[in-house]
Image (tube, rainbow, N blue to C red; front, side):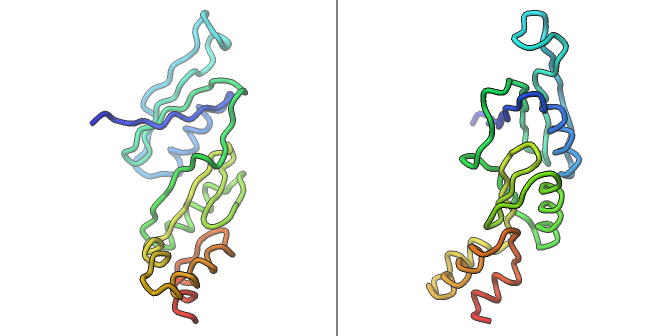
Length: 157
């Protein structure tokens, strides 16, 4: 199967964004940087692409220009191991960005992320429809997801 590499389009912030992301995620690094030449279409010497790896997943960031911007139609989902990880990624990625709702945020570059605690899918798909409804109602009232509060809501506490 071919490797799929998400390509993130920035105006001029590709290097800054890649530096930021590799500082947030463990086992991450920038693997290659290319620059525009005299042929353009941007200024010669400007960063064109930055290839980077976030904990094993390859990405490319491109300084493609201002014609496109990020929106919520695409997001990057982080399946966290525990609430401490949720808290860490939420705090790091909202620095300079904004909290949205239901575990969604936008980082300072406009990229949307979902920061999800373990057990979330099970709570929302619980065969007991009342438990699932209570968990969903609780989630809809949260920005950063709180697994203990979601479980308490599901349990009717």
